[in-house]
Length: 84
Image 1 (cartoon, helix red, strand yellow):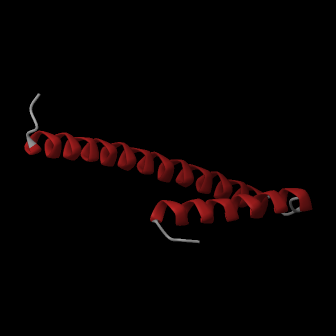
Image 2 (cartoon, rainbow, N blue to C red; image 1 turned 180 degrees about the vertical axis):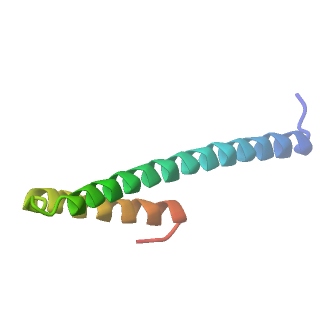
C-alpha cells in the first residue's frame, strides 16, 4: 500500500473542484429561478395596473407575496454567505 502524499492532495483537490462546480451550477440555477419568479410578479403587477376598474389583490395574497419576498431575501442572503 502506497502512502504517497501527492495522491491524497490530488484526490482532495479533485473532490474540492468537483464540489465547487456543483455548487456554482446550483447557484446559477437558483438565481435563474429567482429571476423567473421576479418576472412573474412584475407581470402580475403590470396586469393589475392595466385594469384599474378592478379592485386590488386581496389581503391574503398580499400577505403571501410579502412572505415569499422575505423568504427570497433570506435565501439570497444564505446564497451570498451572509450570516443572519
